[in-house]
Amino acid sequence: MAELTDLEPWGDSGLLIHAARLCDPPCPFHAPSKHHMVTWPLSWRPYSPVERHCPHGIGHPDPDSLTALIRRTGSDASGIHGCDGCCVEPGDEQQDARERRTANARTMVVDGAGLKKIRPR
Image 1 (tube, helix red, strand yellow):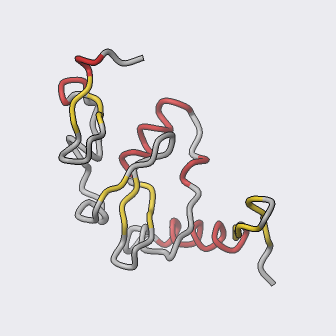
Image 2 (cartoon, rainbow, N blue to C red):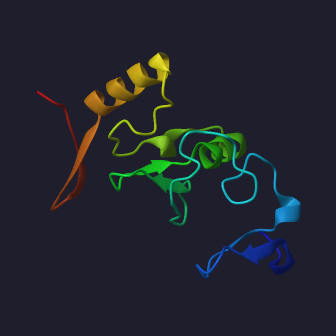
């Protein structure tokens, strides 16, 4: 658990994040990498990676936040998201193919019982 002295406010959001002195780059807050989404607005929900919102309003996991999460947990499962393809690095054909497979294999909808996996036709 972080000590209060290990935290600092994130802008005017009222959220507390790790202090810059404790930062292990890349970091979406203190030292973002030079990915193509770096200028998109940030949002953060507890227990999930920081998201960057594309011009279409879709939240995509911030690559630096996802890297940190994988480093800490060994899992990239929280990188699953509703995707319009904007998070694919331009020119990355391999990543583009992975995103298309993920989008085709896992379409999620909310029904009265919660989330349900549906296969596309």
